[in-house]
Length: 353
Ligand SMILES: C[S@@+](CC[C@H](N)C(=O)[O-])C[C@H]1O[C@@H](n2cnc3c(N)ncnc32)[C@H](O)[C@@H]1O
Image (tube, rainbow, N blue to C red):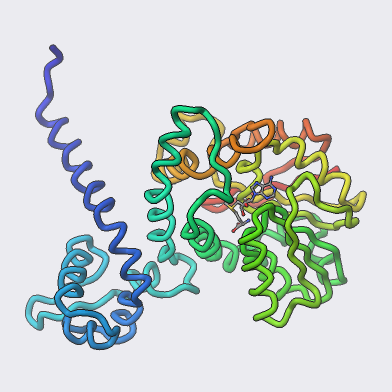
């Protein structure tokens, strides 16, 4: 029998206690987001539980317990003297402001989606089969759109597109752009807003996401120059595209090589393909960190099953890394490949003919 080192055990139990607390609090994040508790507290605090309940039309006893859990999590502040709760600006930026560059309010939706689909994923572990995007519960679609919106809003037009050779000039003059695997079309609309002379076409194989994207384009009054259609990456119609984007979706595809090979044929000869992929190093041992932890977990329950559900089922995973992605692009016939930009969460790869 191996001996247990009590110091190591204590340290590990401390880590686990923290993780268990975060896991138990995950559904409370969703509740706080859905019911507007974080926003009302950030705007109106310091507040008692009665005041927050009154402001949000919720029941005081539940709100008091929720507030206590958030204070114990370090997500809000409790002032013993006044018995009131409040949020510091940094806490508000993370939980209460959809437009801040560090907003994480959509995490509750994503966690809920993975928990609700757990029976499907456990079955898939046994069968080895995939679970397609269309089989997932709705939380996943809106959670994904809202989660990624934060990066797209703050980096896409400001840093990622300018990092691509000659692309911004083309977009300013008037270019044709395809956004493949566009989901709810958040990235498509952000680009369309910034470049009114260009035309944008979003494609996704999931009908529900395309319906939502179309509605968003109508609501924004941009339906005349932004279109959304149901299409797999391998059936996107030729469009002489100056720019084709894959936002966090190439690794979800069953046949990323086939997808990129087909996309090549839809592009203008001097066109650019931008791959936005989760940040990853090339070796597992270099991804054993907090970012890798989030992505490997998401990849296990979202990205890998999505890819295994499709033809080829390459299952790159969300931590494929630049070297593996380069190989995919080269196999698809692209000759130029470079890391154009990066954030702690994203790799921005420029791929050209
Ligand atoms: C993680 S979501 C990203 C959505 C969106 N690009 C974003 O960044 O918010 C992956 C998307 O890829 C789409 N997808 C997966 N496989 C596809 C395929 N073979 N062809 C087209 N879309 C696909 C899914 O329907 C889903 O909308």
